[in-house]
Length: 161
Image 1: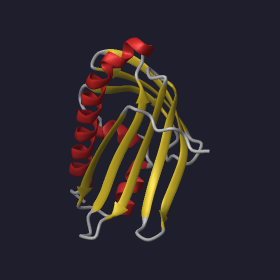
Image 2: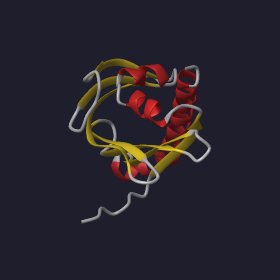
Image 3: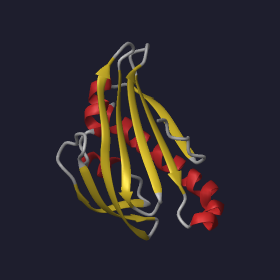
């Protein structure tokens, strides 16, 4: 049975001059999250395996622009490069956090020009129930900025190789 699409979605994508498998592997190591997060979103603690796989749990304490938050995230699915064109993906979901629903899909593919496509898609329900609806434009703006910053940091890190 297919889930109904959520009304609140943020997507950002970038092309990187790096091998697709290197970009995918970079995202399999939770410690790299601390390397690419923007300054306003500090990771205070991270408990996670060295390398994620399906079912892996990540436990984070973060400070999001001065607001402390706890997140428990489960990796629901990892798809290695398969098919034509070859694509890979990581799907994680928050089981505890400030949002009543949070699903994050990372997709990776080798583009025809040899670069790697990286896309992040977040589906969420805002905190605060009906009152939280007024926060949606702000949340979308901040998430967009966060992913743009993460993508640029990933570019700087991986394109140096």
